[in-house]
Image (tube, rainbow, N blue to C red; front, top):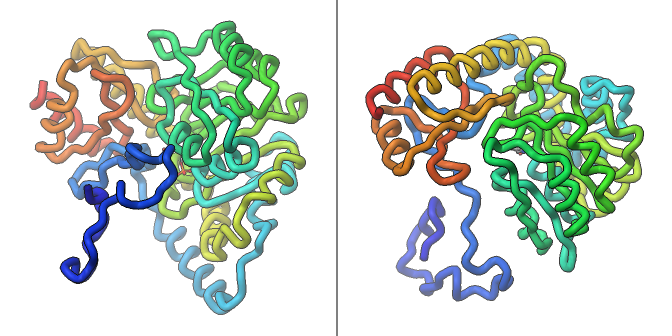
Length: 373
Ligand SMILES: Cc1ncc(COP(=O)(O)O)c(C=O)c1O
């Protein structure tokens, strides 16, 4: 089998034939499939929950200037601890946090991987409540940690008593809570997070990748940090912050947790240019986060529109909507793609997820849906 998307060697005929299964890879990786949201060049891309609004000219100009300045010193390694960026991220998060309680890496995926490297590993377990973000089990098993799949209710909410019972039963080394959850859009009340924290003996990760899109007044797990030293809250610049191409994710946790992550992170993991781009983005955060209200409105309108068509739609606090149910969801996905609209075939069977785009993109989605339905 060839790896999907892997480019052919320049002259494949001169290479000895070999397939993936011929390699002495780890037994626990055999038969697995890589993460693979399709990257297809179509007019309307609503499949990876990015912010659809590109950066302004002012931001692009600022960034170009900053890159020019930093380029003169690229013979040197970057600031290994990313001190300035972490201080600015802490200021952005508020809650009285300082640089010592914040850590950053190449996307929150790398942050999550470092957490697994430090607190998971062979002979250890991580528990998450599915359907949830597909990379949680992939990163878990990639670090030789055993994945335990917990369940959600039919409406995708999490029953606090059942969640705490699952944690007590399995005693995982790491618990994943995702709020708002991907792909369902479900936000968690703080009470549920607290119940899990009280039941857990290991680390509890609250993945808040979509927090900025949550309804006004939704409290962040950041407020629980002072009383819960084993809590880690992760965030990203890839979603509301509209900087997915920059690859910056971050977390807030007790300084001792950051010390643990320093043991596994690669030296100089966050490039000088990445740190500079993130700091420029933070300077422009009012503009970048200024699109969130529009996206929330568009999301709520999309939910209403889909419901008015008799479809089942999960309540969403994020910048995407999970809807169904289609006995042949592949046919619906393909029908939309044929009309130039790419959404995501993800989540439980019979459901599809659409990321919220610009007003124009959502009009194209609705028109394509009319055609398909
Ligand atoms: C719940 C959740 N966490 C984390 C991520 C990772 O994002 P990034 O690595 O771009 O920060 C995603 C991306 O889709 C996500 O949905």
